[in-house]
Amino acid sequence: MSPLEERLGRPSGFGAPERTATHARGPRILFADGQWRLCATSGLWNANMGCGNQRIAEAVGKVLIDHSYLSLFRSAHAPAINAAQALLGVCGEDHYDQVLFTTSGGSANDAAMKTARQ
Image (cartoon, rainbow, N blue to C red; front, side, top):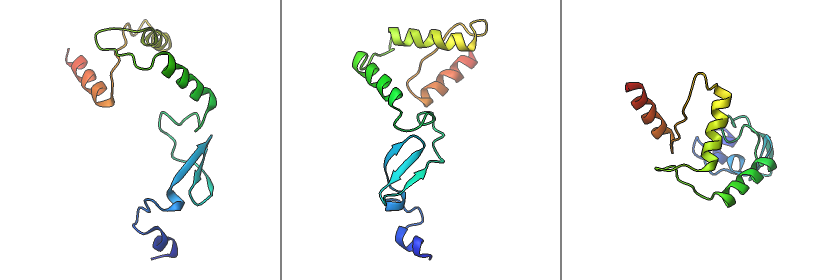
């Protein structure tokens, strides 16, 4: 084993300072060993604008205060209606006339399969 592998322990290195993130700003991650590194894995939907984006944090914070949790179960609410209208505006109302909101990826897949069967 290499010295790095010995320090990291198991092959995954889970919990090693070199692989334990403590903070993130923009495209960089601070690890427990004190090193800032460029994040090359932030392809997830929630990180493509960079970590710690102040404008996004403020917008999310406002929504959490104004609309803490509004269910779409058998009722609508203004943020969902506004989001649906914006989405239809981007996708083109000539192609789509409805938006179906779901609560998870599994639920979305289930809804897509049921819709396709119809």
